[in-house]
Length: 235
Image 1 (cartoon, rainbow, N blue to C red):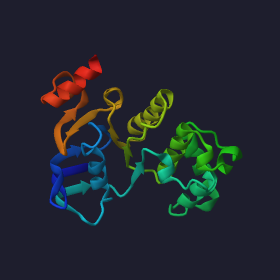
Image 2 (cartoon, helix red, strand yellow; image 1 turned 135 degrees about the vertical axis):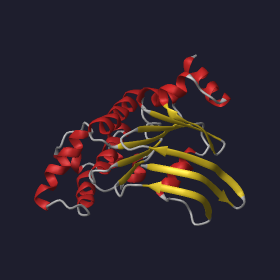
Image 3 (cartoon, rainbow, N blue to C red; image 1 turned 180 degrees about the vertical axis):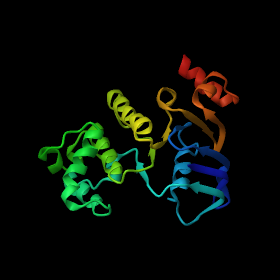
Image 4 (cartoon, helix red, strand yellow; image 1 turned 45 degrees about the horizontal axis):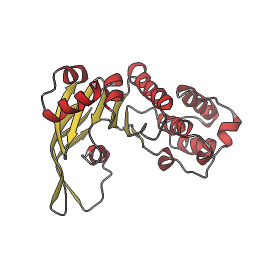
């Protein structure tokens, strides 16, 4: 479970998040939606504890899982651009309780999960030599090495073309429904959020203004800003 309880984030007396509260139940697909600069990424970083030391955090943060992985907007940020894919996957396996004799099998397993072939051509390539969609799949495969219970994805589809976006979201949805993984997906794209999420949170100006089941919010939004987003989506 992921939960924030009345979390306020301050930097030099400026409130960046204010009284943010929500709960993400296990095995759900929770989408955090809102315009750029509204605080979505800060909420994700708060959950992960990835905030600079000069930020002040008030409130309670609950992450009931030891196995949390992150997929970023730019996959190269989570991969070493000049190190072969195979070398990076082997390095990640060193921290897992998997016998070395089974490493190749585990790498093949995660690559297959994300729709990539296990072959020397891919393993010998460096991330900068891959397309954006393929690089994002490698980043997701890297996250899956540890068999995560929670995946936090921050604008993970924004740099991809429409086909690659759908492919990645379908993979995340499959992880949620078949592997019982909790997905926390940060996006500005209401179309993707509506299509794939079970639950939805709406962020505006550092506040979480609505949170609940996606279908309920889409059919009966409570806040003016949410209605405006849906009107644009329906247009």
